[in-house]
Image (cartoon, rainbow, N blue to C red):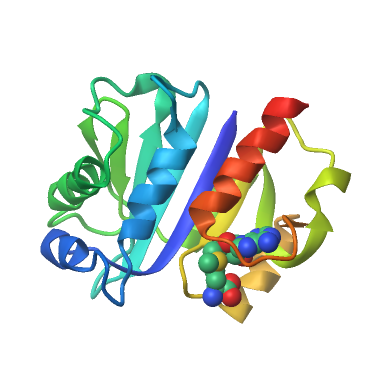
Length: 197
Ligand SMILES: C[S@@+](CC[C@H](N)C(=O)[O-])C[C@H]1O[C@@H](n2cnc3c(N)ncnc32)[C@H](O)[C@@H]1O
């Protein structure tokens, strides 16, 4: 299984603000691009991929929206408008949820009120964690675990204090080359690297 976590620090959990953030300072289009490049290939879905979008601009709890490729049905296309609408629907479904609750939105889509820290603690039980990071080990030198989970951020870097907790969870750092890429571009390169092995 391949898992991807996008820590979207600027993304609002209110669906209207989320949609209004497309092309603005929050750059919520990043979440649609990540979704497209984790889940889709031409004319199909990828098998055995899970993507977690953690939206952190909130007055109460982060929202973690999980898309499981094997369970998705008729998602309705990969264009940005459709994908942002799916995210907005999950955010609406999460209204009124209290801390660490979970709700199924539609087949293959679930929303939880869990933080990034709690999520990665859970994932570390089943996956080797890899953080995408400019100072990491070059990707071609990395031997990947069968269950690999990749951690990325939006345009706001991972806070320093997260580095220590991720270290305690055995997170390895991976570098994808000298250019600073978009999170969605990193995902394409990671999929390709694993597809080729
Ligand atoms: C646009 S970047 C984030 C930029 C952010 N301002 C920063 O300094 O980290 C989005 C994500 O891609 C990762 N990333 C971008 N280029 C990378 C590269 N060449 N190797 C590894 N990770 C990369 C970043 O670490 C981040 O998780």
